[in-house]
Image (cartoon, rainbow, N blue to C red; front, side, top):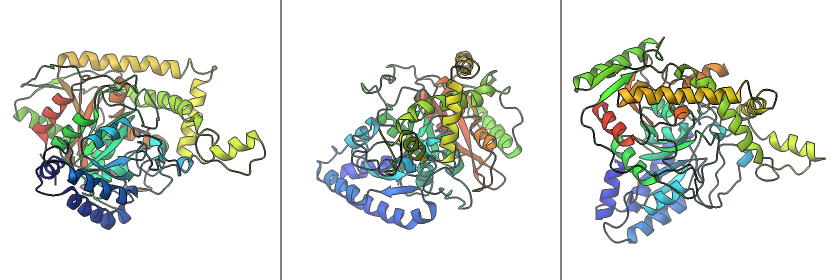
Length: 460
Ligand code: GLN
């Protein structure tokens, strides 16, 4: 059932939240063992909440009354473990609720569990989890994408109608695309990051993954908004003009060498938009091709600083048998997996006084140019379309080369570098009959417009 229908029926009393949650928990028990999408299911808690919601007066149970929602394991839910799929935080219990969790609870949602992810949100396949990979529900031999792979798999398998993910360079959109569901990375600052374990603070954004656009819109309307606990958060500007006719931009200069099934699907999406009266115009994003390297330098730099507190002394895994301070650091910090270590080393190097001018500062300048590209292009068109990923889901263990993995985010990173919103919807299939995604990027706070445009292509 759609989230929007669950909320309606629970509000009117047609079904109880308890019935919904009981069915959800049964489904998770059946499906999760083969998928490994949930790291933990908050069964008792969820049942208790459902009963509470059922005691509330009719039609006052909230916009998400009784809707079962899964959260990525880097979002704090008070009293529950939040491990970031890392041995480092395996037993860390959240001391408070993330703002998004608070907002969901206030609207009657039920947080059913925490989903598996690439450790500290670093990865594109979910193979970097310390607790085993997630399987793609459409083909168990394939990855679900990452880093919010558990969230995407939980939704695509029908275990929950909604899951939250976080997206720093594509971690909502790429797994949503690999699993054939809808995911949005909202405008930077539109959803509070308070209670989201930071990977790269200047790019991290929380967003919903759902089976359809309407549900996505509903959940984003609940979790977005200014928050005094996140100084980078901003309210949506009021009275945005409601457009009826759209012009979409295609950045041909960026989309060179598209492989066949992806190129074909993208072409079809353009034809579809044209058939619905949408104008298509070529736009230039001359610096977008530098977004992936720029992203990796900047986010690794920020991660090296953000993750410094996980040393077992302030937070995290702490061995008891260390001889001295150096040994303590060596042993405690070894709780990180190889990808996290690689990024910390890369980031520390990029920030070091001898090299920051060549790497970190240079990447900041490139980021500015990418932003300007988007601003310029979005003066000419309402939104920009492109494939979400170069290819569909690959097999678990198939991609060993780190750089090849990094390129899975080729088309998603630019929106994070520019801070603009971007949505992915399923569109077309790859050569293995796995889903491909169509990405629509808009101007700051233009999420409503993105949803409108996406609806023109939904279910096609
Ligand atoms: N896949 C990207 C990476 O490996 C993006 C991660 C993210 O958005 N959190 O960094």
